[in-house]
Length: 232
Image 1 (cartoon, rainbow, N blue to C red):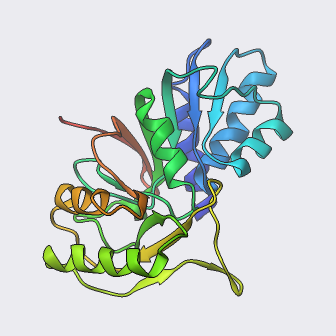
Image 2 (cartoon, helix red, strand yellow; image 1 turned 135 degrees about the horizontal axis):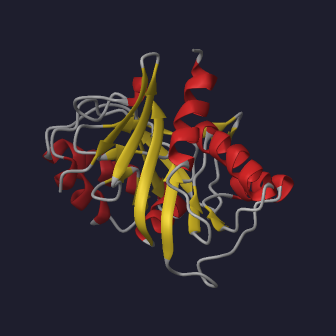
């Protein structure tokens, strides 16, 4: 199967966890979009669900395909979030944010009773860090925040380039109006320590380490579908 078909199969397997009447968190990215398309077919056939999108991009696709939407203000507690990931380690700690929606993705996941990650097998790693870690930051004091992130990482033995994410010649702007720093630290052996260090920096809005949020991962490979459950 090609890469898109693997995403479709992972999304299809995750859809089997969706029940009529559920309040869903709906993720962002190419794999999540395949889930939205399959969910829309179920809605068209009569399934009754309501979703909270994690980005304006996802919201637009849901509206186009007829998936009913709500907000966390109207529906602050969700049953299930389905979302993709950029990397997944054996404990189901994730790196997310390649699509730029990490803040809303984390808020929605935290408001959900369960989070199921959908991905192809290439996203599985023994140790996170091959994919650059997105760090969402306030525009004010950008350079000072970048230096603080570098120092916090160095104190943990991590180093590598930190790049401001760009769209053409302009900085990429998140749906929340923030910038993203992509930190290429390489292997991150202690994700909790890095998470705590980044959260202690005032200019950091959020980071792409998702720790203790995913309850299961549905992984598609050429040999079929594997579901991995968190052991905590």
